[in-house]
Image (tube, rainbow over all chains, first blue to last red; front, side, top):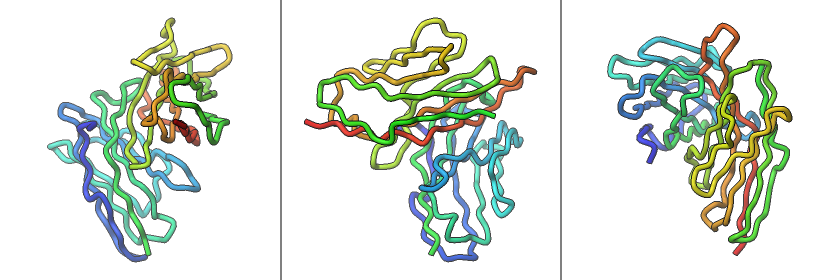
Length: 114
Length: 119
């Protein structure tokens, strides 16, 4: 158990809908990262927050947004969902803002868009 | 830009034998870290081992060791005394600092290698 929690574990929804994925980092960690894992794209970095501020952005679609709250939990919002958004979404956390600090991953949320 | 290449889509090993999973990387940054993660069929990502670009000794964590060859830009994972529970997908990943010292938190991952351990 990495100490990072993600809810829900599974999510099935329809095209055009909006969903919210939630992540709680390990106790004491200030950074939260979101990654998407799909069969065709592999593991892709989406976005990072550090202590409530957006720190880095990767290949995140405009339909996706995220935030980190004062209690350091984070939410990833996915809207106008398409079939291609079906993937495993991971949250990871680390103590510092990144660099060579180890990132510990949550169990992931498997999103299926029908 | 950073790139990680794992050229072995699948590897097979006999239980109790050692196995090496290959990883090569490409970056123009001088400071970086290399990571290996394990993803069992259940889906979670488990951190295994870390090697910093300035570390002179190869990293070891129990049965895992990282064969770091900086000049060749390779960071191979060696698993000794394989166990059935080692069957999983293994990912090599990298994180870098830029020349200005700002850390980039994002991990760049390779495509992964599926390891199957036979009894």
